[in-house]
Image (cartoon, rainbow, N blue to C red):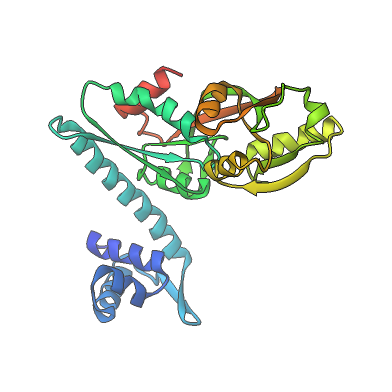
Length: 290
């Protein structure tokens, strides 16, 4: 193979992401003719076709898939290098990019991330909340420094991620009704419930608990956003599960009181990092305090 032109590789990567030369050209502010010529040059350099046309779209050839896999790693390392260079400049705030799973309570995330803000150097915190699959990919590509989730992210198409428990608590159901706490079996089959959606680890644990204890719940709402779920609870539409450790915060913020505690269940928040990113000072501060 001849000398690799990284600009051509970047443009190939854009085509692979967009699925067409026209869309990629629009995003790169180039003409399709220019982009097609650069793609042909890259194919000459690697010695084979990178795409085959399927209908109106493009599909990667086996060689194209190999080149894409390496280009992902190359550009991921480039992003990491830029972040490391910026982190060495102590005159500028250090970026700390965090992904937050949609089932993680906001007040808990704030509590867990606050220690990172006590670093001796200025820190600029950026928090995004998206589906875990999107966050896992961004973390693997070093577009994020940390992801907080309710289950280890494990292996992605981009590589293995490292996970460590950051916080753990039993699970309590909360309600606006203000009644004295009851035994779980006596109330969870009687009161309307607001639950996370089926793909959430907590939901799966709850379903198992219901089955083992012969409880047939009345589920009136399912949510993949914990804040929206709590908004419905504030309207008195049902009881919802959350970490027992947040009892005082939830009462102050949402006016809810404990209905019953499921002492057998544990809800864990995991800190997920990509290899080579765990040396970020803010990540180190959080993991050392876990």
